Image (cartoon, rainbow, N blue to C red; front, side, top):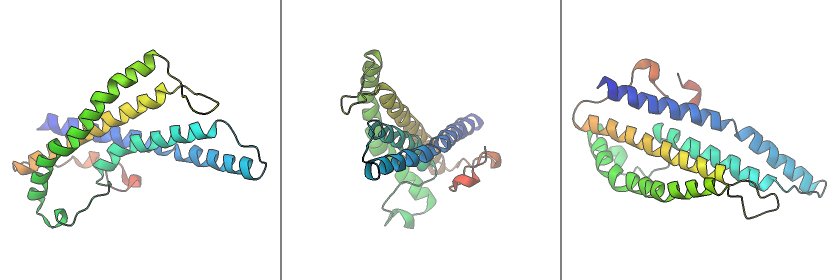
Length: 187
């Protein structure tokens, strides 16, 4: 159980650190959008590169934040029935539905995305829209990494639920607790 707890804590920590780092990209994202708006509407001189940079930054923020959001139970869900269940019944629902829905979706996505990313890297693929035509393989690479991180976090959540179902819940050690408030993360 110590090894399982250590692996799950490691997954949680890596996802929290990466999500916090990616969150800092929100600042340059906002700044370049403001820059574009001022240039476009005040000086009538739109840029050629802001569109590409905004989807680059936004995709990093979303993809690297998805696993952390799953970890902190922050994804939108319809809990009309789920919230009324006991912790063990919730865990049983998770143990059944994660393989049916979550893992099926993300493993199929990885199956399609992985060869696509490898091909993009090998061809040094560039964007086909716009004027700047930046390299697109880094964009596809962090999409793949984000899906891998999300899938690993799903495995961690599934293992925790399975432990609750079998009557041996894994309580994280006090020093590794990752709170739902990002300011309270202790690493």
